[in-house]
Amino acid sequence: MSSGGVFKVNTTTPILRFTVDTNGEGQVTGTYEITDTATGDVVTTLSAAAVAANSTSQVKVPAGKLTTGRTYSFRTTSYDGSHYANGWSGPVLFTVGTSWTPTAARTPWGWLANTCSGAADIAAAASSGSSYAAISVTEENVVSVLWDGANGAIDVQNELMPNKLTIPAAGSDGTQVGGNVVYASTGSVDAVVQPTVDGGSRTLNILKDSSAPHDYETSFVIPAGMSAVTYEDGSVSLYADGDEEAGQAPVAEAAGFFDAPWAKDVNGSDVATCYQVVGDRLVQHVEFDANSAFPIVIGPAWWSTTQKITSAPQ
Image (cartoon, rainbow, N blue to C red; front, side, top):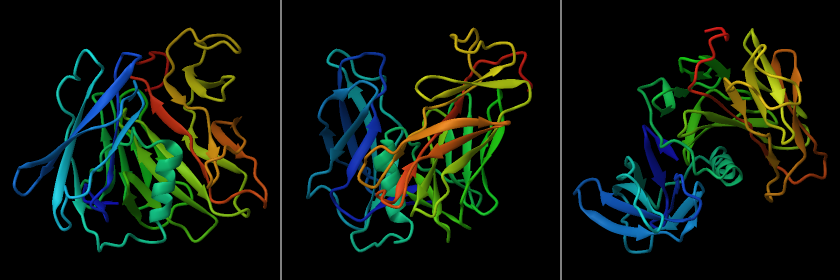
């Protein structure tokens, strides 16, 4: 869990993760350097098992390296067998507190969301005063997630397509859990928002029981002058009108993109789901019944490209 941009863990042997981002296609080894923030001393440097390029590296901190009550940072780099990455990543702060107990109502959803989505591309936790629970910043885009879920939204602040994605099924306040911002509700659906390192975001719905609805608006309004194109894998791209041809490869770069929708039950099994374009909105339909293994996590992802389309409204 995180508060004020610092993660909290209640174990001295946490699992650290990062996305192994490389242009290659071979195996990549992640290196993790952990520093005691109070002393500035490097307490350990760990090498993870090799993983495929552009996948998730992870390593468990061995016992005896971390001390409860202290704050640490870790940074990462990678090696593809020939070259190291260009320097280290930025530091991620975390505090160890073995007696700390996370909020019971919200914590399981954060970890469940991480498990179902992979979690490797979630932006390191950051906060901005009393307004934002998490911020993901790239050269082209800023995604800001408000603490206040009752009337809050994800602010997509890029030049190409600024937009405000409302947070569905949200409670009054967000809680950071494992890089997620979790909004607990009194109904059958809770929400988890994951700002990602590429300047996008995922808004995951947690369906707690069979009384949950089967259809979910993505809360993204297709801008005037744009059309949605759905592909065989279920993903959806947005193009300026006239730039797309139904059933054919696009002739211009998309202004926005939704990953193929997915849904997983508490056992990690896939649940049937698809997108439907209804008017100027995307709706995710989920197939489940009273015999399904709840909770079920459903998770679209959205981001916008960096290239402007001059015929699209600004």
